[in-house]
Length: 258
Image 1: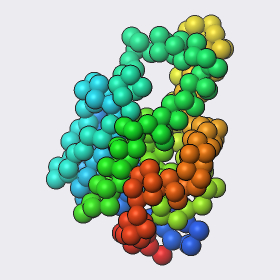
Image 2: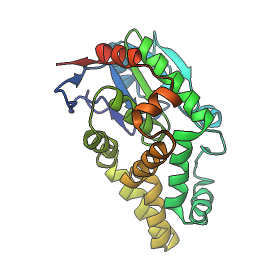
Image 3: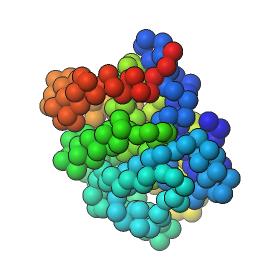
């Protein structure tokens, strides 16, 4: 799928193969940033590929602040992964205050984001949310789009889980996760440069960059927690997400092709 001009990030996984040489079927699974700013042209593109289900992983307050533009003939699912307090609405008025709060978090911004990822893979709300999202994906009749706000953290973790289920190795999963950085490089630079100039602070700019990008260490932190608690990713799927071997086979048959 070509890049949609009206949203920040979209990924259809079309450029990667799993460890058995299979690809994800064209226009079957799509991850993205929020759909609140979809143009008429981009909305038409998505409707033409038969999007039957949109899974919104944002908090209730995020959804209220920027509701998705609904696609014709699509089922819309609210599946909040984290609480409102963990996923606050970020706007021009509170952006700096939120950044300062993250900077003063014990251990700094990176420690704050690591804790965020810990919640993504361990909290009851997150686990229930990912269970529900996977069930929707398994039962969908057409193309599925799932997204949060930026499309990199809550959405990124769901993508990692899905890719593992679909037989992709860890190296490919990590590479796909970091694809977000390449696509959004220009915006990330503009935001961080703007902060550095406006507040005369390299420290604030560097701290902002930790929030805006996908970093290997965030996934590593989540991965380590899963191994500590469950011993393996397979056990995590079976015990934490209630995914069965039959579910895995069904998902592979549904979404993979040679």
